[in-house]
Amino acid sequence: MDDANGWFEEAEHNLELAEIMAQHQEYAMACFLCQQAVEMALKALLLFQKNEFPKTHSLRELASKAGVFSQVKELIALLEEDYTSARYFDAAGKHTWEAYDEERFERRFPSAKEALELIKKWIND
View 1 (cartoon, helix red, strand yellow):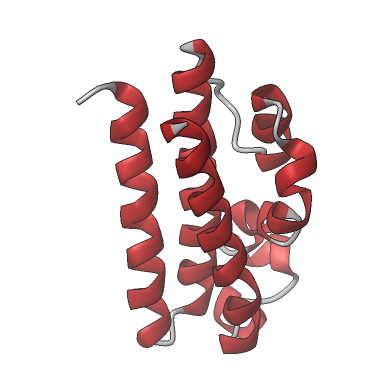
View 2 (view 1 turned 135 degrees about the vertical axis):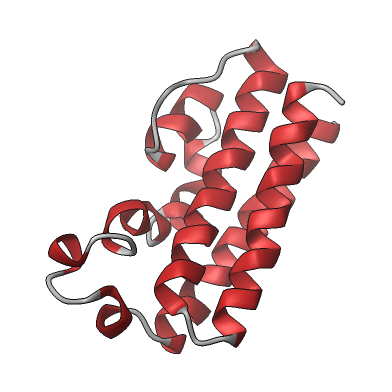
C-alpha cells in the first residue's frame, strides 16, 4: 500500500467512526472525526499529486495546496472550525458536549462524505 492510499483509507475509517460516535450521541467527537477525515483525504491527495505531506490541520490550506479549494470551499467551511472547537471547551465557549448536538453533526457529515467522494475521484482519475 502506498502512502496516499493508506492515508485515504484512514480518512474513510475516520468517517465511519464519526457515524458510530454520532449513534452514541458523542457529537463533538463525531464532528472532529469528520474534520479529520477530510484533512487526511486532502493529505492523501497531496501525496498522490506532489508527494507532499504538509504539517498543517487547516483544510483551507490543504485544499489550496492541492489546487481544489474552489471545488471544496463550501464543503469544508463548517468543518474547518471543528479541529479546535470540537476538542477544547475554551475554544467552543462551553463544554464540547454542550456545544455540539445532532443537528450540528447532520450539517457536517454530508459535507465530509461528499468531500471524500470528490477526493477519491481525483486520486483515481
